[in-house]
View (cartoon, rainbow, N blue to C red):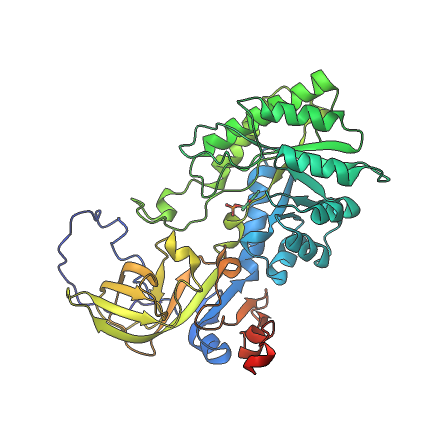
Length: 449
Ligand SMILES: *Cc1c(COP(=O)(O)O)cnc(C)c1O
């Protein structure tokens, strides 16, 4: 396609920006009139603005790419889809069709996974907040309880007593993998001996069956080597369990935390230039596990609970300009019909945002505000965009992770979410909310009627 003519311009480089390869150098300026093969104006006309769009093709591609990265380096790999990252049933079902188990962190998510047809024994139950009823339900459906604390272990022992079969358990471990930030509030610490204590207690409990060891290092972890360290440490713990307690560990679960191609705020380079390839993570993990001294026929299953790395790329948020303003300091500001109510990840990322119209003119720094009556509703502090006016449309890229689970019904209603299938057909997978839907759980006391 021939690109439209753009008048050449001289632009002064301001302090803090990089060269022409840096984040300010025009990222987002390229117009995008289609997402996943569908016309943006046509989608907005049909389904309203704003609109979340998910590409089924990209969901499947990402799952296949992750499996390929790890599966070509290690013989036994299993994905478990992280429900909280995006638990719209259509999304979960695409991943389950691609062979993923479910990774859940609440009773609500456990029921969602069962409702999506995931057999209980393919559900891994993480998180610090399992109630006695949740534990009983997990035991009933044969899900694996990933233990978070000694108190939870005690609660589970009470639930497990007298059941026809032992409750399957994995011990969640937190450890020093060389990362600056340690998620040591979850699970049992390795270095201070708690993890080993937990392994011993589970192994000694006749009502429990120790099947796995788990470790989720963090999120958007940019250090592949950290996964190698975590894998080596979990493998050593598994071998200790085998040698000292005659306990075989079926699986080592390295959690999620693999980055997407988004650009973290304050990042010095855009995501695509900075984020290591999944192959690097896979190589670090495979090397650690294959070198850990397991007999070839006794290699544990490697479980991965990737969330954002699987779904972020497949999601788009389409929206429309409501108004433009000039701020007192001279900057241009644009008010959009979506804000941090829908784009929770705007707090973390400088999302790539593209204009739809090709002939909008010379890009300049623009503040992007959402529609909320809240000062914190900033979609981007500064984006390089051509001058846009009311009715102009925009595409926000890589929004599949966490936004459709952490969005808020605040001030206004949440919009349609559609899935574009492999044939390019669009399906509403979550309907735009209505006043009636939001008010359905409300009750007005008699004296206020
Ligand atoms: C949130 C979470 C994941 C997924 O994390 P991502 O950073 O989205 O990959 C995996 N495992 C556990 C235990 C989690 O809490």
